[in-house]
Length: 418
Image 1 (cartoon, rainbow, N blue to C red):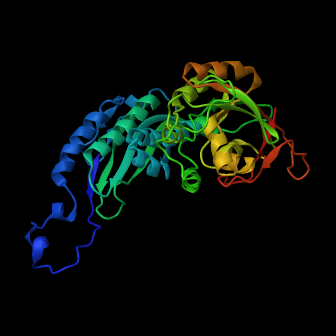
Image 2: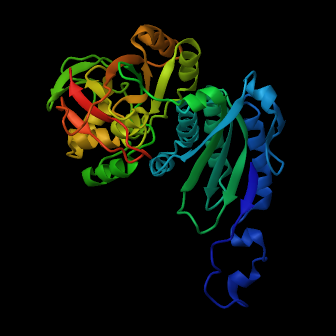
Image 3: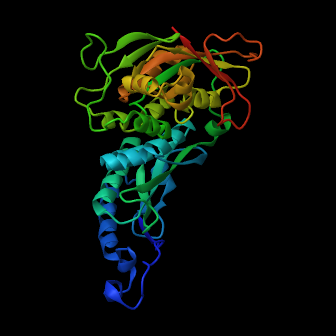
């Protein structure tokens, strides 16, 4: 974790040669940058980083860059290639900072990057983070990086280094920015084959913890318009007579929905900001035991935008709503924000954080492997085709076409009721 200091804050107005300002010793501290405090912080962050896997680490925090011996860290690959991803936590950070849930921010940052890397076929090797704040707060910074290290341990990768920046006047009081970068490894043959679903594949969905780290610009707007109290008990949950933690089957619009309440006693703020789940162990376990044709990390754009990225042209993914339990937070947002079903599926993950496309013969094994890795998993749909044309194919539910994330034309997604 290197140090970066910037003095974006202009000098205070007033006479430069008189008053209290003139009596303050000039220097970086007067400009808002505490070098001594940062040196102590970096030593603490180095200790935290060493709690993550250290295989192959030649140089970690403290140098100009981290160094990792690829052969030691990656293991046996016939023709290894690197797989890299970068992401952040988005505007969820504003809520996390306000609630003091800084460790969650660190986990989220790792999850958003690592899940993308495994969806692309890579095994995570190492992670770098970038943390910037207006004024150094060692307690907050340590908490954030503790979360980063927790996420790295869960993903099985090394926290190799990063950047901690103190930038006076650049961020609002108590706010900070957090971004991450993950590098993984894969066999060249697997990458060249591509991660693409096939007609006849079954879709296995892995459960999310809730919103993960997407859609928070809309969430924050709904909270503001509703005047919601983040510290109050979550105003959603049990259906009539349902004990805490159980599912209740309801009809919602044209599609069936199973809604799962949050744990008893949880606040609205906690329910909205549950840590993003990390699917690395489940994805790697499935990939080692069965042929996973494709993985889709369900982030911004929801199922329509992300699942369609792994569909070849002339196919569609038919996803059956009601085949998995949706965290009750989604129902509350839908009703409180007066959102349509279409908008909900376009913005949120709706309870599925990762979807795997596997052959029918491998479904039972895939579900068992995901469950053994700590993730609830369900059969949530199938891939139909080939040769389908959206212009002539009758829609069976809500149809979503033209993913904003696709570089080329592929298949499409339909959400149907059971």
